[in-house]
Amino acid sequence: MSLNLRDNIKVAVDSIKSNKLRAIITMLIIAIGIMALVGIFTAIDAIKNGINSNFTDMGANTFTIRNGEFGVRVGKRGRKAKRYEPITYKDAMRFKTQFDMPCLTSISTLASQTSRLKSEGEKTNPNIQVFGTDENYLQTSGYELAQGRNFTAAEANSGKNIVIIGKDIDALLFPRSSGYDKIISIGALKYKVVGVLKPKGSSAAFGGDKICIIPLTNARQYFGGEKMDFTINVMVTHISKLEVVLEEGRGLFRKIRHVSVTEEDDFAITKSDSLATMLIDDLNKVTMGATIIGIITLLGAAIGLMNILLVTVTERTREIGIRKALGATQQTIKNQFLIESIVICLFGGSIGILLGIIIGNLISMALDTGFFVPWFWMMSGYAICVIVGLVSGYIPAKRASQLDPIESLRFE
Image 1: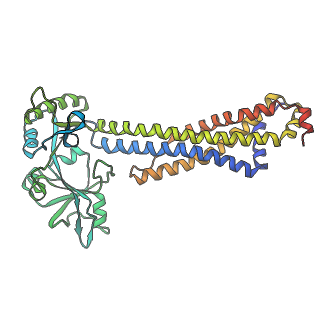
Image 2: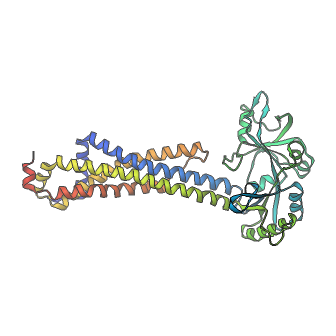
Image 3: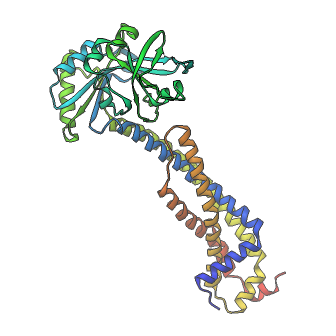
């Protein structure tokens, strides 16, 4: 008797139904292994997407000039040999006025990271970032307005008490209406809201939607100090010109900072995509470790499935003998057990993939990187299930196919 694929699947499903408890336990073993693997990769891919989104929102044709990494030079033996001088307002303004390449240049400074905003009886936590910016900052940083308008050049230079707020701040201070054209307090100062930003999302590097933007001169007047540090954003007209403009910008800023030919830069230039790449490279190291953990978990699940199938072969020895007596070949018996193993893995894998997607997205949503559907890992999960089913089921299937039909019929 030769069973075709459909018959083998039907026999496998009937066998699973007749041993529901054992089948459920086996499926759960596979589900846990697949869940660990898919969940880890879903979370990591969602985080990568979030990083890419946050940085490429600034534009692939943008680069930033800021103080050196962590503001220090590291000398021999890892000691901090010299601290970089902050980028002063004078340095930044000289660059903006003298840089005549085809680009848009903006200047900004982080005025405060711990401000509390108040309005109409509502207030925020004291963790709001306040940026002082010029009229070009929104465009070079990838922000868009949902309501209102941007600063004019005159307003940025005059230090007028006006403000543009992020969507989260708008929702916190004005839960029943919009904050546009209303008055808010930043510390002891009153500001008129002239714009509300569209949602952008948060990340470790940016204020995201909990951001507050005031004119640059205003920030210098009320939040400034001796060591106030400024950042320069440059957006070129076309991405093909990025490298040329970047090198021209480097040369001009070295001249402004009086860096000699033999000295290295005392400032950092980063492209939005290169910063994202750096973070993703670091995340890839985490991915490697997570992969090893996931594979070990799945290996344990495969061993558990193999043990259960070996027990199943012993319990069904008489059934195997009857089938062989009716004409079933060794290959037919082997195929039957392999298909049964694969079916169990696919059922368990489906549960694991679903749980993995849920858990992975819960992690990514907790990190504000949004919902992510891991199509690649879903397909990979099913492929892994088939491989695990074949590997785990091969030894039990081979043992079942090699049973002597006469001895099998006598088995009690």
